[in-house]
Image (cartoon, rainbow, N blue to C red):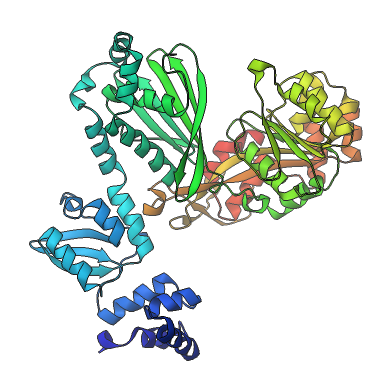
Length: 572
């Protein structure tokens, strides 16, 4: 009998909506038409998942969600060939298994008889529907059609795999015999264009930060960096090396004929109605030119301090430091530790129409409204130091210098901070306390350092555990390295599921060592205090070391102990 119950009655009986809410939705349906479930979702009374589960109960057919890992075609049945990708994506359907002449298909609307009839005609099978949400089917279609299968199809279409026996060196040597016009023509052929487009688009969809295309001995390598770690991807054949390289150079407005020198360029792609910047760099190696494409998607990275993973006590210190109208704020850490993102988030928080903000960057990674951003060009004399000289004639309130690389830039930065400007910059040091001694070591007088410094943030990034599959486990004494203290008896470790591509981690969070300069610290620096002495005083004022900051994330279940030890064990 449950099979013929109305969906509104099912939702009401299970306490998901009230009788009044159902009455309101029915009234709206009578006025505007449409499906009752869609109206309830639009009103915010139920979720898409809840409607689909209710539909499953109403029709007495199975419900499968993407998170179970079962929403995927059975292996070795070539089901993707029965239903074309374009049809599956457009109609939100996915073949799951086939037994004789019966095809089990995930569908978001099993009451769509026209769609089911079309599926019969396309596949030649009787359709056995199971139900899932549109969002889950879309993700499952992308996973089933959009990764290795489509990738390999594009590779096969773009070139002859039989040429893979030749070395990159042999292929590269042939380029000398080709005219530039022929190289450009080959790079512009439809299969090559499609392959490069697929490499880039797949990377963007999977939240990749960098694409590495590397010529190696006897092969071509393609790797994606996800959450700071490089992963191998199905690689194109060696015969496609030159067309791919040339295509990327054309897009990036590089010199195709130049193979001996490194080059930098970039281009933009449009996906899902948003523009995404790609910064491209080539490097000549002994086997050919290596290409790295850095993906700069501002929508993927929240330029909001509160969303970067700072602890509440860390945010409090940072915001206190940003309240000043002058002084020097320094971000330190290795390349790829998120310094630029934190700087942008800080600027984004304090920007206003009453402040003139100017930046000098190399490169300009994210474009932000309300901020005047300058790309430095050392080859024409526009260095950080020269840009800063010009900034001081532009009536600035806040200045950002992308990197303090030399004594000249450091002196200019500090003097700008001492003349009534709030100055942001980055420096390469291992921790916050070392930053102070580093500035003195490169030749800056300690009295200038203490007078100008306002806030120092040393930063690293740790991978966040996947919230869908992380596993709790009880710590044993032998699992904890000496010198490390954890207050949580139970912490979490990585497992791996479909949502995180079996990695166990999704996204990254910051860990920090933050020092807010006060008079006591300035007095000790002026007296020549060592790094350890500075850190000892800062800890009494609430500063956490990088390791201690990371262990807090472990206790909160954000990341694993192994991840923190790999990133911040050196600060013990």
